[in-house]
Every structure is written in C-alpha cells, then in structure tokens.
Image (cartoon, rainbow, N blue to C red; front, side, top):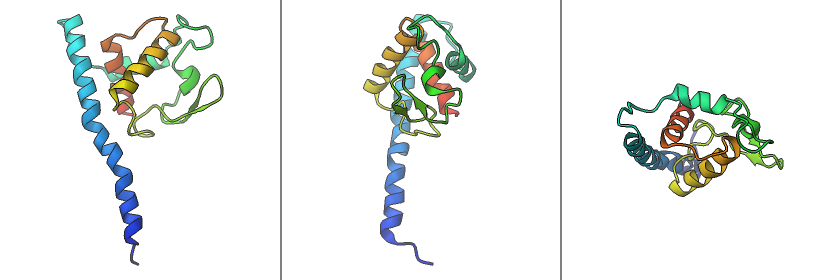
Length: 138
C-alpha cells in the first residue's frame, strides 16, 4: 500500500514544531539554571519531584479561586484543563503539548500570571526549572 506523499509531508511537518521546541526549552532551562545558581551557590540541579510537589500542592496563597495549579490544569498534567471561565487549556505536560515551555515570552507571561494567582508571589528560578523538568517527563 502506497502512502500519499502529501500525507507523509503533513505528518513530518507536524513533528517539526515539537522537535524545534527542544533547543529553545533547553535554552530557557539553562537561563533558569544560571539564575538558580546565582540565587543559591549550592544549587545542584532541577528536580522533577519538587516540580511535581509544586504542581500538586494546594497553596491557597494567591487568589481564592485558584489555590493550586490543579485548579485549572487538573491533577493529570497529560489531560486538558479548563480556566475558571471555562476555556479549554491544552495539556501542560510536554507529552500532550510538545511545544510548551519553548517560547521565553510565553514562559515568562504564564509563570508570572499563574505564580501570582496560585502562590501569591513570583516563582523562583528554581521553582520554574523544577516545574518544567517535571512536565518534561510527563
């Protein structure tokens, strides 16, 4: 059975953004690593376990209606979530949304907004790196 060339081309092009995202994501993580080392000279690396704890903890320090990341994203990071307004959110895990955490402006925007909403403060470079590391394995 011969697969149409256009179909193969569409499949291949669909993979480009995900594969192209990896170097950009690594650059973001490298920047967070440098900032984490500057904040704590004893920094030894990001932890998926700490990232999972950050994701699953009900902080209740930010806005009353968003006490945890799971409020909008759900407990399964590979599944779609919903904003408080009911708008669908793509899965936060890289396995569900491979381009996630690859655009520095988007990363800054969403960590800024969501950390203030959930934690009531900015996330540290360590927290951001841990979170991305956890989501990279999901």
